[in-house]
Amino acid sequence: MSEDTVNSDASPREPLVDERIVYWYFLTAVGYLFISLMGGFLMAFQLIRHNPLQGIELLSPGRWRMLHTNAIAYGFIANGFLGMLHWTVPRLTLHPVLNRKLSWFIYAAWQVVVVGTAIGLIFGEAQPLEWGETPVWIDPLAQLGLLLVAINFMAPITQTKGPLYVSLWYFIAAFVWTFLTYAMGNFVPEYFVSGTSAGAVGGLFIHDLVGLFVTPLGWGMMYYFVPILLKKPIWSHGLSLVGFWGLAFFYPLQGIHHFLYTPIPMFLQYGAIISTIAVELVVTTVVINFIGTIWGSGRAVVTNIPIRWFYTGMVYYFLTCFQCALQVTLTFQALIHFTDWVVGHAHLVMFGVFSMWQLGMMTYLIPRLLKTEWYSRKLCEAHYWLSAGGMLVMAGDLILGGLFQGWSWAALQPWDASVEVSQPFWITRVFAGIAILAGQIAFAWNIYKTWQLSKASAEAVA
Image 1: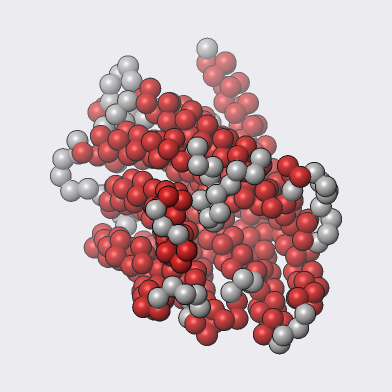
Image 2: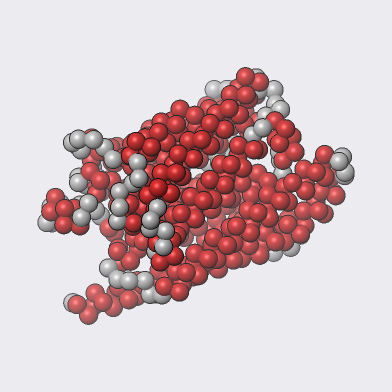
């Protein structure tokens, strides 16, 4: 789709895409990324017995650990995806969102949700559910916000005539699934079920948040940007739909694999194991599709930094899914459950895959939003290598450390022994985190200097 096609269909007084809100979503997302990193560092320093805020209850590592995970999921990733949707949906449909004022209202309301969640977590009002710690008084507002997001973006999609591109399939599914998943995780265990039933629902929520919120938006984003960056169509539209329906059928069933060896009925545990392994086959079709797309254009990974972000994230994604297929087996689960293997896996998914895809998208779009080239390509390179390299070290370190922890427990050694054997891995994690933080500082500085260039250019034209 050319720029001329997009602009010719838009009102001369009102551009098809509100680039200002896209830019503000990206800036906000980057701000939350730094907050999340700070929370992660507090927890990391606590583990190596060097917590700089020792004795301050409101800033205790347990509270900041929840802030770390919620800031990355609802602060960075959610804001990044909302900015992405404001760019892609109007261009794919050739229709603007339902209402621009509604878009800005959603932007403001979502920041209230994220900041309100952070305040609630710091003051000890968390719910006892992983990724669902949001205070009970935030949940209705967040649920309403998700509904408004769906309404705002579904309006242009429903006006589209003819077949829908696969990205829109994923986006439509994400609007429905995210709304239902949030309700399931934040209302059902709180008000309707208890005991092992609440645990089962919580397990489904934990994984469905990744598989039915983050994954469809991430894959939809990839299917939009990769063909544009490579200037060639996706290798197989049919294979992309195999990935879509495989995700829809298998992913909702696998959350129970977080609770193997529990009183949850074994048929549910076996079902989760089978569906998890099946999802890996589905992911393989997606990876094959993108390999087929870049086939013959492999040098783009060297010369095109956004493509490098996207394909590095895809490699990490395949590795995480392969890792997941191993860790859901009952034999392997007996070794790695409750260890840092799972922590390494989570970091590889949330930062190594989806955050890297979003950072690649921002690397591509921010110069277009500011109407000027990046201030420094070297800073873009530094951002990539520090982030990708730091993530590789951190994930590998935690995964290996998790094995040592599991072996220590299996040998029936005292708990203290597993803590001591973990110290080298936890220290290495701090240095990997420093590399990742340095990469984001380079990114933020590059954004600031590029904005200055954009502002100077605009003043010169005026």
